[in-house]
Length: 302
Image 1 (tube, rainbow, N blue to C red):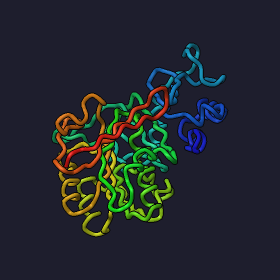
Image 2 (tube, rainbow, N blue to C red; image 1 turned 30 degrees about the horizontal axis):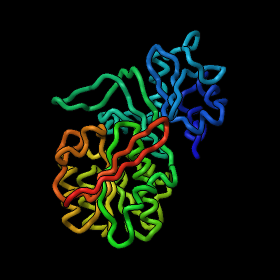
Image 3 (cartoon, helix red, strand yellow; image 1 turned 90 degrees about the vertical axis):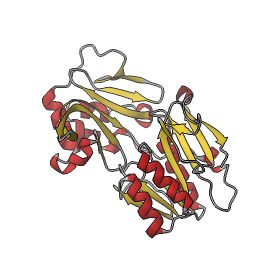
């Protein structure tokens, strides 16, 4: 299991936080989910069921007396995250994030730079959130229980942010692939597969790295002959249409969507959009009570 040090925090955050992170106790390191930098505040850490401020004594409950982040220190971290080539990462910065090797996503809070009404990049950052990505073998076991051989079913995984969607989808891809199913992952943000040296997604999985979702789904079906296409965080109408086209083409689809539990599934809607009829066989609602992972399966009419 990756820990804080394995992600390379000592390289990214600099002193004094690098040394403190290296000394983080093993339990905290193993359950760490988010590292948050905010201008004028100390470094904050968040786990599955804990949160606190990082200091020389480890994780503490109050920020009193701890060093705070300056604009110069935050700028230096972003430049290290971008391998000192912010211009080369403008496409990601325009979406408000950077992705690190291993699938770890860094969300950025800052000022949008507009060109013809479109966000060209971001700058003058005031905060960042580094989300730790991990493989959790067995996370998709409840989902795998709906497959009894033959063509795999299509499923939509829904949960709020930090609800476990990517983790479950990643493990579902691995398990299907290990059972001989040909899977193509359309990994637009390099989170699901984690890049070339990322996660084990099984022996029968191909990855379209960095492709826009809708275009990647089309290419996957046309040239890679998958049994299943998997895509994370569907949000745009063209992405829903691409999934519907894949299903009509005889390919099963696995997808995730941001959605509150009380909003997903009502009249076939998720994330504020109506998904096309007949695309999904199952709706999978995910939640995390007390730091765990709960999976609820609903069979959908075709």
